[in-house]
Image (cartoon, rainbow over all chains, first blue to last red; front, side, top):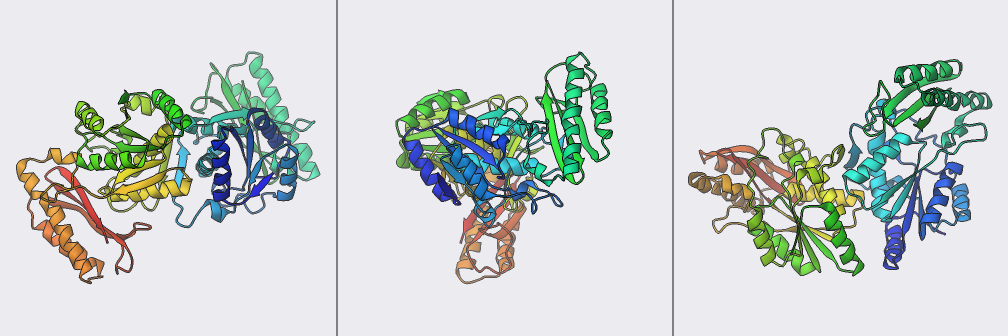
Length: 279
Length: 279
């Protein structure tokens, strides 16, 4: 497995692989890899000749007061996991390598970024689109893999690729959960044992909401209220948002007529967790 | 010469050319081609196996009240010129083909977009960066050619390519002028005979400013004043801006210590013309 910190070195390898006609799969990550990431890497390994994992805590997608400094990191463990899954190259650049002196460029997607996490994280998705654009260009990947846990991110990246004609296929992969239902996240490591138990309320509330919807309830407010009430029953939980949006423009719906995304963000203590379902 | 209006068809040809290992040069234009464009096409023809010209009046780089509707168009003449210069493919999409239903993506470069034309055309360069990104992705060009007449655009596109790691080389080409010194521009067609004569004041003023600089004057305000005075001597001319900026961040300089861009925008009647020099 090639481990590199420079764009130049990645591009040299990519040029060689392209010359040989090999397909490339990219798994963009912020490191501290867990089974959610592993599922993306395994899918990439199945689909492509070459698998590149990027391991980079992207500063420009964090707002002031967010957890950029404390975001968990363990590059040695990440390398071990990637090596075990047959990754060909792991790209672990410094912020200075990614954002050169005089960096002023930005990429973003309006409308889809305005609700859900975009409300409390106004610069987040521009930061994501910008770094993802860079990673697409550096890796020249044929396919890139994103988890459905970050549902809004997945929708936005897909739209960006369509709108801007990127020559890459975006593959969304299902949420991977702990045995007790908590969605896997690098941020789960922030939770103390009591909070870890309290965090189960997210999946519990969403499961109830989904049952309600599948049983025929099409009034979004009623489903949101049911989810909200369950989360509020947990003293350690504080809701950031509970929302049901259409899957095209990610705008709130009143009456459910087509496919929707039901997404929530909840603070458990100081840790902000997200989860969702499509239905 | 292939003439096509669809992204799909361009991509099919590009895939075939790439498979054969051919290099591709892109000349992005808004059509109504003149000798300035021809010089870009000729350079692209020398440097590459394949030359693609895009011919698209890009609506998202025009602000309210600008000349989107009246912008001159003559696609038949453009095809003739391209055919004569050995262009392989001319891409002439509709706005609907470029901006699909639900298009919400944008690309831009801050700081470099804020001065010069950016002051009076606040959305212009985001529109340029967005369409250029699309054209780069659609054409998968190895090189793209831009005229130095649009000096700010050239600097911004170069920065975008560097910042976002596009796999393309940006080639800037010299300003092409009429025999009497007026920089070639599709917008020159708006000028009536009297205005056409008055428009010579741009090149005259810049030539004087450049002489002053090369003779050792390093006070930017003095050079700007000399240029301004000459332009103001022409009754049909109305200055939008006369500015001297550094070539890295395009910020106004007081004392000239390194390379600068001296750029002007002047209304001749209702027609806004630009011109510049690097020194």
